[in-house]
Amino acid sequence: MAPREKIEHVLIVDDESVVRKGINRALANRHIQATEAANGKEALNLLNTRSFDLVLLDIKMEDMSGVEILQQIRQKKPETNVVMITGYPTISTAVRCTKLGALDYLTKPFSLDDLDAALGKVQSQKTAKRDSSKHIGIKQDSPKHLIVGQSPPMKKVFQKIQKVAPTESSVLISGESGTGKELVARAIHANSNRKEMKFVAVDCSALVETLLESELFGHVKGSFTGAHQTKHGLFELANHGTFFFDEIANLSLKIQAKLLRVIQEREFMKVGDQHRIKLDVRIIAASNTPLSEAIQNGTFREDLFYRLSVVPLELPPLRQRKEDIPLLIEHFLEKLSHKMKKPPPKISPEAIGVLEQYPWPGNVRELEHVIERILILEDTDIIQERNLPSYIIQQQGDLQIFPEDPITLEELEKKYIAFVLKRAEGKKIEAARILGINRKTLSAKINKYGLRG
Image 1 (spheres, rainbow, N blue to C red):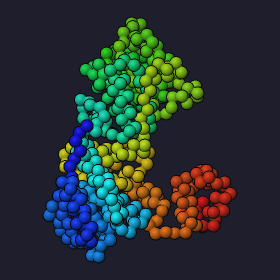
Image 2: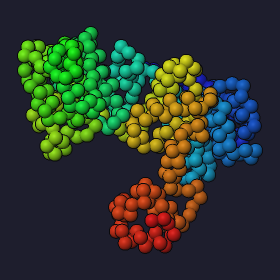
Image 3: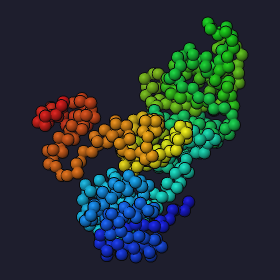
Image 4: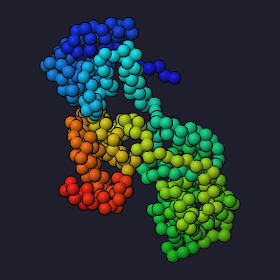
């Protein structure tokens, strides 16, 4: 296990001298240097002249609040870790500080165990930043094919890749569009005994059946109109390597039958030819729709499914691995900035927080496109929340059901029904299903609150 990053210097910001001195002693016993600030102005002056591993920041002070100071820290030094301290805890304040990027929240009087837990979080954060370039699940020859992730779902994926890669078994990768199925296929190939040979991929949804047959198997001169010369097929090019079928559910039943024969007999013929070509390839397939449904619908052969899915491998959507989002953001900022020949900007904790809350229907691919768009359109050294695409910021606003100040239950019900109606695109049946009420009751509430139904 890699050593954890040390906390060397902490800034203590509190207008109570006894609190500052008590924390300072506790930190000294842990061999951590501390600097004290009795108010917000003094704290900001210190932050302008030096860097700290951690700022312990009281929320309620006379000259300015800890929340104001936190906002300024996030604008000027967004990489600084901040833990808030308060003797007047409220849920709304805790939520606000968390949204602004505070790492933790301590309530006075706090114990040494509480302080140690907060210090542990800071150490983990610093270690994660140090090792972010190491959180690559599978080593590959080309940087553009790196798989980034350290979440539990992705660790399971990496373990499965490492187990299956050295074998010759067929692999069926399932997952929503944009989850990185081809990257996983390439990772399997790059860690296999065939890594020195070709990796050939075909998108089964991109070609019509007649062209796909010729692309896969090749053809001889004169085999059909337009076949002016003999052509090598993709199977022939991939011989001794790995062949990847992306979106395999789009194959016609006719091509499925031919593919099954190729897998069984390990040989094929070019279109219009009688000569059989021996084939030695590893088959990896992927689908963004469950092939079991296609089998039930009669559009996919069950015998082919069993040939392809010797080892099934399912990729999680990005919304189920949100702890990977900061790593992915950093990876894409570096990768795309290098491509654009410009230094990578930093990103504020607030902006990261908004991106973590967005549901990412387009998964990792959508996140990469968002980062690319920001790098092209926004000229900034630090990406703030305002630099994010408007539809993501709007989505964040939709998710904020609970206001800062308490409201009546009736007002909360009105806000939530409006939120669900918007999510259901005005469809009352769908909104009623989500809310767990019948359509008649929903219509009555819509009329009562004057909502658009």
